[in-house]
Amino acid sequence: MSEQKKPLIDEEGLRTDGRKIDEFRPITITLGYLRHADGSVLYQQGKCKIIAAVFGPSEVHPKHIELPDRAILRVRYHMAPFSVEERKSPAPSRREIELSMVIRNSLEPVIMTELFPRTVIDIFIEVLQADGGTRVAGLTAATLALADAGIPMRGLVAGCATGKVEGKVVVDLNDIEDKEGEADMPVAYIPTLNKISLLQMDGIMTRDEFKEALSMGINSCMKIYQMQVSALKSKYGQVEAQAKEEE
Ligand code: ADP
Image 1: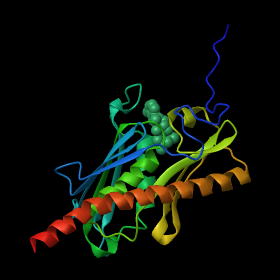
Image 2 (image 1 turned 120 degrees about the horizontal axis):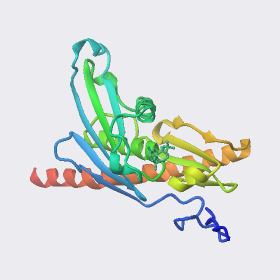
Image 3 (image 1 turned 90 degrees about the vertical axis):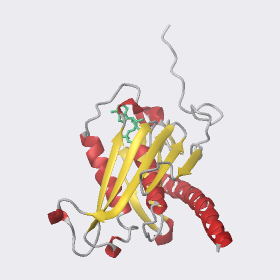
């Protein structure tokens, strides 16, 4: 007898990890996670574990790549060899080079690079454990690390994937849903600018499904944005209160 494959969505509408279709995975944010970076975070979304670290603005080397009117943004998205089931090569893959660029482009609209001409801001995203949706989780984490480093920004970027699994539009696909589902659509949104800063799609959806996925994605980004704000407030609110006490 052939083995029956477990459905990705059961009769009660629950997914393999017990979530509803519009539910994203539990998120924890630990700001200032690293001692030697100017800003950092450990960002966990379900089984995804990501560290983001920011350095700068600092002097540019080699000098000839500096820009006279703004800071350069350098982003490195990298998956650790142990982050996936089968050990991955530590060398940067084409996928990682592309994602570094996609994340850089999504961060650019918020960072006030014009305040720091002739400098560089380095952003490192290290995926320690991957379970789907790492580009958007990495982007959300990088934004938090930038804020933690005190880099002036026009707003925060919050990201969350949406997609289609067994004919249903769902948010925040995990690895198995990403691989076995019909479509995966990462979305990132900047609430303060009312702008979408990342939108990609792998797979096929109808026009109506796309609209539904986009609206579910933005909705989740709004909730994730509120979590970003409250994590920053709880760290820096305390610092502010302490400074007032010491005055
Ligand atoms: P994202 O992580 O943004 O969803 P992809 O759609 O390319 O990006 O990847 C989906 C998932 O596939 C990843 O989150 C990860 O769980 C898995 N994955 C990516 N690259 C590899 C790899 N080299 N080996 C094994 N699994 C991988």
